[in-house]
Image (cartoon, rainbow, N blue to C red; front, side, top):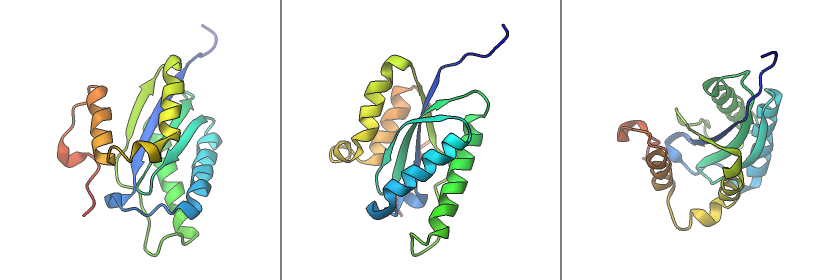
Length: 153
């Protein structure tokens, strides 16, 4: 085969350190745009991005030129630096260690995009930690409670 052909769709979920509600609605859209630009700079495509005050969901069409962990490291590092450089938070902003990454087929994308874009409505019914555990369970991912996103202290 003379070329590489792929179709990789990854749904990322990552949270603010200690799940504090630090993402302010006044700059949330700018943050989404900044994260989108980071991902695009690495030659991937953002299909949907949205979140709440304490976490973010991003659906990415990935190229196989970069690992999932490398992309997440850059996204979290650069976006937290941007938040801190712009003094959007009174203290130092950081993302919680770790993330969720779940793969989907092309036929599933409309449902995932709708889910991501309707986060506020969805979280009226289900808190974040319950939502995240459901993802892990649905995908058959074994986990230890002490290593998943921490509750607010």
